[in-house]
Length: 407
Image (cartoon, rainbow, N blue to C red; front, side, top):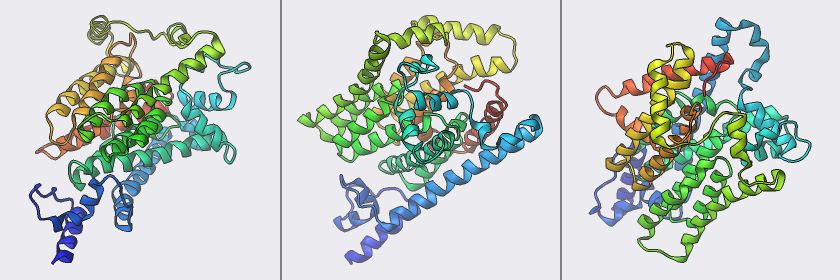
């Protein structure tokens, strides 16, 4: 009888059925989903098949489709650039990361203004460059990080819901309007991967691993610092009380401190990057009640052209989406309080930017957005969300490949 119940649990997980109520017989808790809820996950062949079928193959297929669509877009709009091959993806911040990986921040670097970029992604490129050329290494790093992020998101969602929502969340991630940044040699995939897995590790009780992963996120983007309060909330939900291992969360602060130390060591001031952002990239920080009305004024008064869409409308839409997802994260059964904390703090930090032109790309690191989109897609007419997202992805990807501004 126990073996039959165990088989039923396996079948239930494979079909994506909802988790049985807490009062289920003990024998039913021997299935795959029960093992996933334990602190120690035994990665078996069945789980690997799920990852391959639901995450890895779809991500690779959609990535290929995006790259093929990009090729045909240039065939129509800029056929003279087709000879670039994969290098058509290598512009804006992509080459900047590669230059930084080659020269570092120190004396002799041809671009000292790249101090505004955090060190972990360039470091991965530098390590891989021992085997492959810079650009190929950067593209491979983005691909592997995207797969890692997809598997992490899939596992995180299945801790609270079923296989169907987990698959939908992965699709929402790779079809998001700015998901071309998961294909280009950008740091978004690495930040998303380390962030998602930090939450997975915390949910499974691996506090030390969570702290280390979140530290890596904080060495990839400054927003990694926001994982401190978010994972703190998750820690209290998992542990139910404070123990000594909560100090692993404090390790995350080492990320920003290392970055400030780099600024101080090479440029004599830990806040040197702030002046670079202001003087070279024309981005500063202000109060939200000043920056947000200013953005709205631009949306209302600027000429309605391509620049109006990408520089003003898209950032405003990103702020609205962050606000909606924050509210959704508070009330949805598919979310957690820690997700709401992370989304809210990230959104609030972005509202302080006087020129938030890259925010539609930066929110790729806010993974609750993808869970929310997948949840909305299950409602009547909800598939329109994914369709609209895919159409916007095609539009912004085309602009990006044509060397126009797309975040």
